[in-house]
Amino acid sequence: MEKFLFHSSAIFMGLWSGSSYAENHYNLPPPATIVAREIYDLHTLILLVCVVIFVVVFGVMFYSLYKHRKSLGHQAVQFHEHRTLEIVWSIIPFLILAGMAYPATKVILGMKDTSASDISIKITGHQWKWEYEYMGEGVRFISSLATPQSQIDNQMAKDEHYLLETDRPLVVPTGKKVRLLVTADDVIHSWWVPEFGVKQDAIPGFIKEAWIRVDKPGIYRGQCAELCGVGHGFMPIVVQALPPENYAVWLKAQKATIAAAAAEAGKTYTMEDLKERGEKIFATNCALCHQATGQGLAGAFPPLIDGAAFAAPEQLTAPLAERGFWKDGKIVLGTKEHHLDIVMHGISGSAMQAFDKQLSDLDIAAVVTYERNSWGNHTGDVIQPLAVKALRK
Image (cartoon, rainbow, N blue to C red; front, side):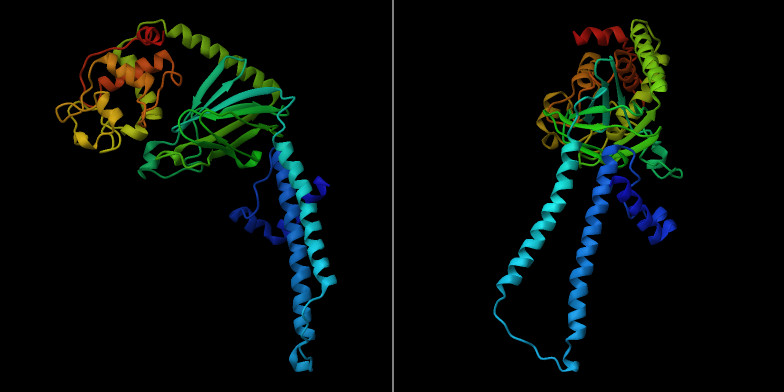
């Protein structure tokens, strides 16, 4: 039945015009998982039912109007009720709806059945990036927008995957049932990959489940589908499906990289090394709010340049004012301990999120060092990873 519906829909769309479909994408995207395939088949089945109803109802109506028109001498007949007809036209729609409800319910229940999964991945939405944690494997990383700022600012041509490219994709094995545990750290997000047939809201304080089993290796793209703030449009999803043997190699490499990073965190770094790394971390995690120049956005996101004006005291929200963002009419960097505290723990009640669980000790040390020694800031402070590690305790 599924194959029939799938091939029928393919023939129907081919008759509609293959080139037109390719350009305009009137139908659902080609399914890449069994869930997406069942949704596609259900969509096609319901569409065909609606077409049949349309043809039958309007066919009878137009035939009656044509054959019983006044010009042929037909006279309108007045009648008050026809109980048999009323019963028939009540029962038929009920049977149609019941017939449509059965396959729809079956698909919905199948979408929620996460039992007997091979892999579990926790997905956490942040403003505005995704965090992926491979449960039981010790692998966790942040996936952020990789589109260059120059494209966003219209300084260069936009490429094919504008706003749909990340620095680190979610990697899954093909042919394996992957259980997705979806939640959020701040506001409501929504993890949506059309080709997978998955659109699961990420709600703070709740864990929602979904699952995928990708048919073929490849790159699949999606986006956050819930308005989640000023960076909502900059929160793409990229999933790379690999054959199981290649996935095993990738997973092993990730564990080795994590072990190497843990070893690097114990080293002492120069300011130049930290600034070079910190610039990349800042561009990925901070530039959207504070701007690449550190100027911030007036009245919304404070600048990181010592002496730059932000807003009048009465315009500041309480969390910003209480955490020392206002002093003598200017934004100041304050002590490095205060700076680290803000980056690591965020500011409750504001858009400044906590990065202690998102970034490594080395990354936090690098970005704080970069911020304190860039754009005209000359504190001379060099933050080492061990100092960050000590604050985690």
